[in-house]
Length: 95
Image (cartoon, rainbow, N blue to C red; front, side, top):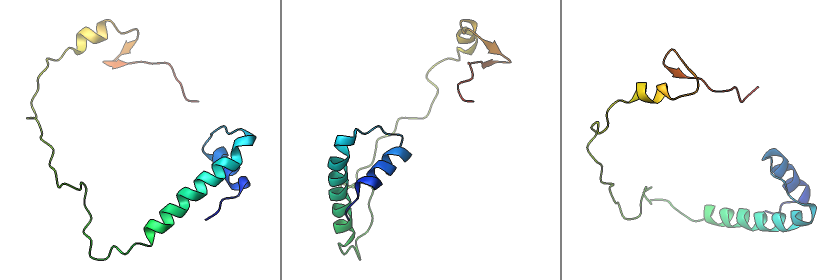
């Protein structure tokens, strides 16, 4: 698959990425190669191959689920700049 420079510019706009005009062709070439590799991997016959989460069938050791620290909520809220009804208040950041 070959991406055009206009497509790369549109993708960059949608992703809110700033790309210099002189780099667009390079990105188009590199992204086209990546998409070609994905297409090639999709053509591989995987019939009869079981999906796996890890190639070594490794299991992760888990620690016991128990409380190891004491509740220090009042201590932390006492030094917080703004607390109301047991909740931390922060400035509004999204309009």
